[in-house]
Amino acid sequence: MAFIKIQNVVINTSYVAAVKLNHQTSSGEKSVSVLIATPKFPLFQEGTICQNPQELCHSEWIEFTGSAANALQDYFTSFNNVIDLLPQHQESSII
Image (cartoon, rainbow, N blue to C red):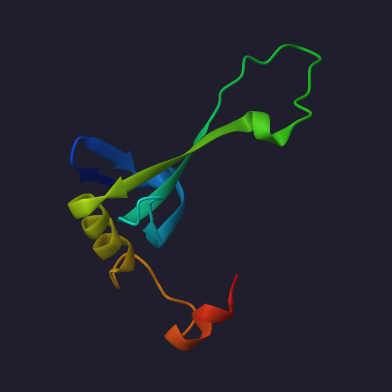
């Protein structure tokens, strides 16, 4: 488990489900978005079964711009943190 601090936000990297790099806001500003997924701990009652898997976690996209976006871009593209499974020229063919 690791923690990263971006401005006044501390993120437990164990809960990072996805990252959108090189994204833009509606105003055209560069942004990086991080999807945080945290487990929900429902109270279990005898005889009840969770029918909906979405009830098991809560997720939320957090968007960063400016220097925070640059720092996250650097962190999540660092060789020590992320292994790039596809060569650069193949990424454009993925949706």
